[in-house]
Length: 413
Image (cartoon, rainbow, N blue to C red; front, top):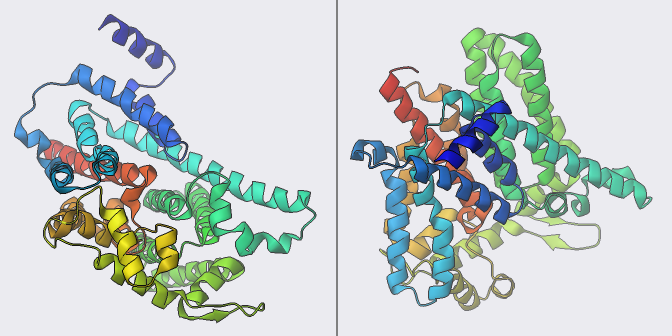
């Protein structure tokens, strides 16, 4: 206890509370190596255990559906054949147990949560800038034309590789930051200019990352959110006019990034100058069909450890040898969960999103827009397969429940 008090005193002397420092460590390490972020979670757990006390069931109620998802994942090991893979996957899913433990043991002040989110915005902007700057620098140093900046070689996978984050996951972070920035828009014109510039930059970077469905989801929810914010302080006609200008800016950004244009065109079929023809839309449908066919138990699924191998074998049966050789997952979180945990797991996954929805003034709540975003992007990416995806999503869901519970207990919106 004395050591804990000394550490707390030192941290407070730096102008940070212990809780804020832990939140900052979590957000800063999230886009970095998984081990770094795991250490930040372990440090938070150490603090949680020093504060832990048996709490009434009411305290745990907001997180019960997350805990239920973890319990179902754990029970699936009973019928999983590949137990080693199952235990590895369960370690990732344990975040649905650990984070509720943190949020019921540690009182995170609203001001600390907001400060940590602000630092996260700054951090993601710096990473995005570094990624773009490094790409341009590589072009200059290799004596290549800057017109290649938006070619696929320097966009999408390569752009994310510079910072070590897969594009759909970086898009997850940038999209959340954009929604946070939209939520900050108010009557302060000077600050609104700064927020707008940051939104445009992060939007440009997200488009340059070229992850198709995350771009569609972001444009959809951000347009709705911005329009709702505009109508608070403007007439309906003025709001539509400003929205029209915004759509024009977004359309210009979209057209400027050639790699993204081409990736969208590939869905319906596109022939390149080299003669290569790509039509990825039907391929994606075939991939989902094969993944659905991988489930051998409709209600309970194949088990957490066998889901990926089942999908690989199903791809072989469906003649999708490229997908099988590369050991692709379902690229759809709903299907991935259905194959591993059956209808029971799928019900809990959808329940997480629905239970987190805030029905009081719903279209003024930024996290409601993020829930809509998640419900869309889950269609094209199995986010729970990577540390950065499952940890970030579980954290945001816990923040939503924590803040809803705080508002109910204090009566303050």
